[in-house]
Length: 180
Image (cartoon, rainbow, N blue to C red; front, side, top):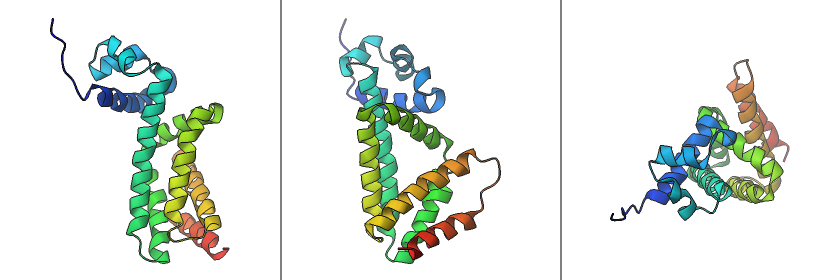
């Protein structure tokens, strides 16, 4: 039997893992489940990844890079401080809060990072990139505060049973920037 050449197999496994974690959580996935969803032989899992931890690390790295890249693009497009403040509001109110998939993935990553330093390396790099993008327009202290505000407001918006008032977000951004 000829071996099937599949140059996209590894990437497909990683992409399927991201989607499976978004749907089932880390606790709900297995090598067998990922292989079936990716339509690859189970042996491909061990060929491409030493274990599920390596696969999860790569999947969460890919996910965090995609979110960080979008975050950076918003802030790079801003040419003034006011536009940068609006970009931060848009990130909170539109980009991050409107994706239950990304919220789940982010929280799954945070849970792993809270327990395992290898995953904290992913979240540290993500925060470094976010703060660096913010520092194009704001001081390091304000950038750190805005980064924390973005995370906190996103969580509150997603989990609160009351509708979020966008004015609260804008007001909080203004308050942080004024207090600098």
